[in-house]
Amino acid sequence: MDTRPIGIFDSGIGGLTVANAIRKALPNESLVYFGDTAHLPYGDKSPELIRHYSARIAHFLLQHNCKMVVIACNTASSHAHETVDAVAGPDIPVVNVIDPVVEEIVLRHTKKKVGIIGTKGTIDSKVYPKRIKKLNKQARVSSLATPLLAPMIEEGFVSNSISKTVINSYLEKPILKGVQAIVLGCTHYPLIKKQVSAYYGKEVAILDSPSLVAKEVKQLLAVNDLAASSHHEPTFHFMVSDKTDSFERSTRLFFKERISLEEVKMWDSPRPI
Ligand code: DGL
Image (cartoon, rainbow, N blue to C red; front, top):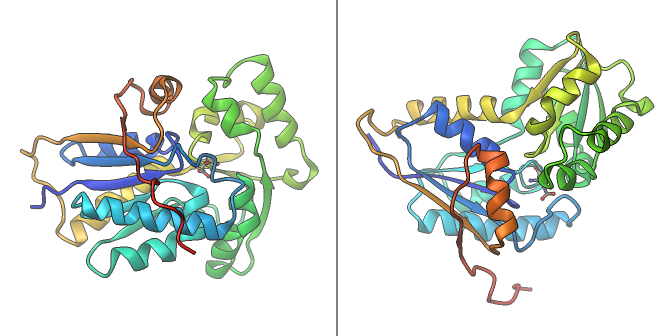
């Protein structure tokens, strides 16, 4: 039995969708969450900068005695998984939000044409098609960057005429024509799962990461003998690098309850060259 917390990070508060799924699947586990709101969005930053931010955050989570690191951000998972792995070392498992979804596709949606939507960073990295095709050479994968979606969702625009127009105008793009499964490859997109599903109808499978990642976390804790006991009273600690009322209000959208955020001035020292 290991009562140390699970560390989770994202560019901001969107990763709370993943934190919420982990909390539900593992109600005895303590969580330390870090949202890098000072640098949000990661979706259009360079891979080098994302690796730099992610390494620093991984160190921070280890300083908080985390027994596992979950990269809840798709963009950081795309560019910085190996960096975070290197910081964590062999004893701290690292989970990213891409591999559990890739495994699900390869396992259950083998013959389908798969569409991926996400930030520019995630889509430009080609991480999803590369990893899917590594496991299944015949796979058909089409990707589309949908950068308007994250800020729109963060402002609470998920089920009105504006969000419908934006969502549909992306999904109508010829590149996504004929998809039979679609990956919601961004922390924010689980909030528009219903709307995407309404656009496609029942025939198209909609995949998002939170529940698949929570399942992976549960398995890894068990395999590595890192789980807390069923009597453990968990603690939750939510930190951000820049706190505003608006971020705190938006936590309700992603975590299904409003939570208090603590500001940590992580970036006072200049960026190393
Ligand atoms: N968390 C990011 C992701 O999942 C979306 C927001 C951002 O661009 O920072 O890719």
